[in-house]
Image 1 (cartoon, rainbow, N blue to C red):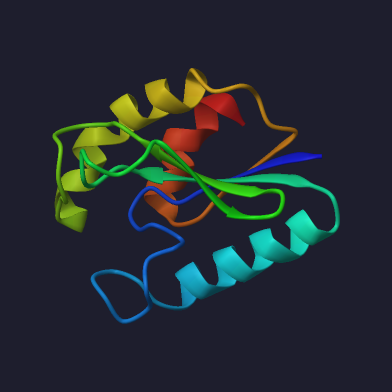
Image 2 (image 1 turned 90 degrees about the horizontal axis):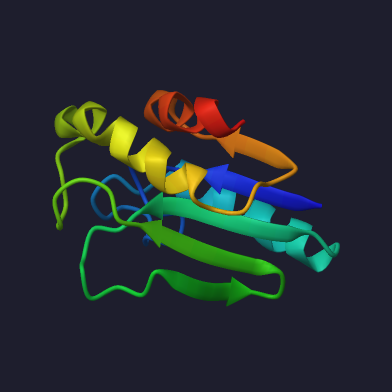
Length: 116
């Protein structure tokens, strides 16, 4: 099964206790790893916050991080993210479809709804 975990406001591979990273990051990463071990293809989809970051990063067997370009390059305050949900949704729509789209945090749901 192809599974997409959408996390617009924070990267699932960001170290907890840095920036907006915390329990959600740990949960998503460990769930993705577990699903990957079971043979699923899991994409952790987040917003690119550094133009130098790779667009696709292998994380674990069956798991990859996709950093989508949406809005201005660089980090944004959480209050600024609603202004880029349409651009993020457009970038999501350009990806191959997933069998399951699971959004984490309300901003991610707004952006992911058109492709769910």
